[in-house]
Amino acid sequence: MNRPTHEGNHKAMMKALVYHGPQRIEWEDRPKPVILQETDAVVRITTTTICGTDLHIFKGDVPAVSDGRILGHEGVGVIEEIGTNVLQFHPGDKVVISLISSCGRCPFCKKGMYSHCLTGGWQLGNRIDGTQAEYVRIPMADTGLYLLPPGVQEEAGVMLSCILPTGLECGALNARVKPGDTVAIVGAGPVGLAALLMAQLYSPAQTIMIDLDENRLKIARSFGATQTVNSSDGKAAERVLELTQTTGVDVAIEAVGLGATFDICQAIIAPGGRIANVGVHGKPVELHLEKLWSSNITLTTRLVDAGSTPMLLKMIQAGRLDPARLISHRFSMPEILKAYDTFANASREQALKVVIKNEGS
Ligand SMILES: [Zn+2]
Ligand SMILES: [Zn+2]
Image (cartoon, rainbow, N blue to C red):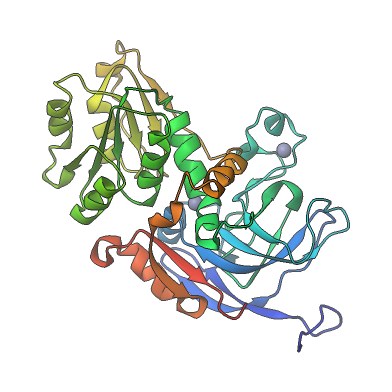
């Protein structure tokens, strides 16, 4: 095997998707990552995907991401190399990469808020180089990686890096979905659909999906949404109130990240209801306390902690969940810019999750 070494001047190179400021990404040569800390692992990516958050970064909504950053926080791969203090994994293990790194020791980790770990959190494709590359360095590998169990396909596994834990933790759990609830989800993109799959675990009576795109609403119905509302006429809130005999919904999950979609949630929430924000917001929204101050509502926000990943892996392994249904398109790594274009034009392309395979692997 012709594998250049890390020593000397012969830096091993790889291909990676690199952010160069708003609206500029390139598939280019970068040095292959190496072990920097004894708790690191280097993983050869075999499957990755693009998150809605990556599109927010692409648009410039996440200013913390700097020029030169390799994007991506989702992936499945094979461990190539481990630091001396990685105890749970070995080279050759096939793993799911979690978007969240956690030390397990800091005050936030001790509260289960791994996303706010003082030395970790959401780092990949944000504060450190990410997974849309042939290789990635994973810090604190023992807590940030999960062994892909036998029988779980890579395409299902990659949905556990971000989207499914997000739908569960930021959506269904934060909104405290209960049996018999009426749940509205604003946004039927991949995260909204993941929130639907996760809300269904708690037996809601009614699940109303709201989106501008008829194709996505059709998919939402195939995922079991009991009703769908096309919001393109600007009258989604009225329609939801009709569907709930003017009461409104017990749960409104915002899965877009815009003022207009947050407004729908505020307009349809019933007294005692819970609004769970999942979307990444780049701009301020208006909070209508002049209407909601007396409505006993709860508003939650969260960055996914990914503590639910082992449980979700078990459910997939048991055949209780099939998250690969969220995948609409497949690309090879050199086609990654095409994958971005497809995902960014989701309505035109009828795209949900786009999966990118490292066929050289
Ligand atoms: Zn994500
Ligand atoms: Zn921590």
